[in-house]
Length: 366
Image (cartoon, rainbow, N blue to C red; front, top):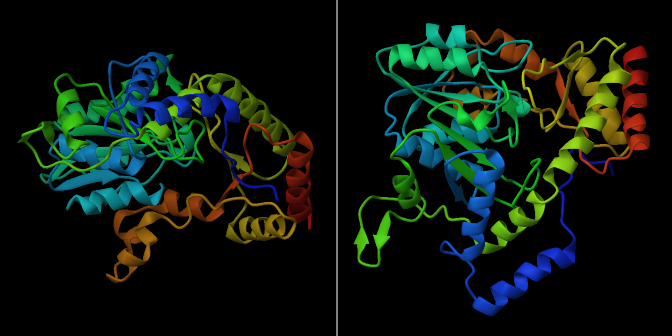
C-alpha cells in the first residue's frame, strides 16, 4: 500500500538512548529535562524567542485564543482541517467564514476586511498546506481595525516568507507536530508568541494555571508535552532539513510529470517551502473522485484534503443554513470539490510516484 503520508521515525537505537535516561529518572512529564531541551532547540531552529511546547496542535489553538482573551466573532477560513473551526466553537466564539484566493488556496484578505463587524475581535488565518498567507496585508487589516491576528501554521514547520520564519508573523502562531506532519513528536504542538508579556501566561494555561505547589492563579488545562514526545522531537529535529529536501525533489518531480495535463497546482508564496503536501486540482469533482477511487483500487491512498469544507460539516448542516451561499465561499467550494493530495513523504520511491502519475494520466485521457 502506498499511503498519502508516512510518519518519519528516527533510528530506534537513537530513541532508546533517550529512553534509558527516562527509565533512570522516572520523570515522564511535567516539564522534564527533555521537554526543556526540545523547547530550547526548537527556538534556535525556528529563530524565535517565545515558544511553548504543548500536547497537540488543537490545544495550541485553544490556548492561543484563550491567552488573547478573544470574544465575539473571529474571521477564519472554511478550507482547513476540522480543528481550526472546532476550537473556535469550543471557546464559545462565532466563526465568520472568508473565501479563499483560488491560486494560493489561502484566506482572501479583501474578503476578510469586508466581513469585519463591531463584534469582530480576531482573524484566524491558516497557512494551507504550509503555503504562507498574505501575512502583510492581513497584519495591515488587523492593525487598522484593532484585531488580534493568529496564524494556524500547523502545516508550516520550517517555512519562511521573505526570508523570515513564517511563525514570526502575527500576534501568535501555532504549530502541529502530529505524526503525519513534516516534523512530528508523535502528537504535539507549539505556540509561538510575537508579543511581549505572554510567555508566562501561556505556560500557566498549559498546566492548569498552576504557579506553584499552593497557587493556582488562572483556570488552565492540561496541555503539557511529555518526555516521550519531546524525545521524538529531539531525534527528528536532527535530520529535518534532509527530509524536507527529499520532499522537495518528489514535489518537483510530480509537477514536472503532471505539467502538461489539465490540472492546477497551488501557487507557492514561500521563500522557503517545506513541501508538506502535493495538492492537485482536477477539472471537476467527477474527475477528482474517479482518480481517487482508481488509485485506491490500485493500493494507493490519496486524500480529498480539504473536503468537505468545515461549513459543510454535519453540525452546521443541521441548522438548515447554506453557509457557502451565506458567506459567499465560491472559491473555497470550487477548490474543495476538485483538490486531491497525492502521496508525498521522504522515502516515497520514484517508481511509486510514476505509478501514481500513470493512473492519473489514464483517467484523464479516458
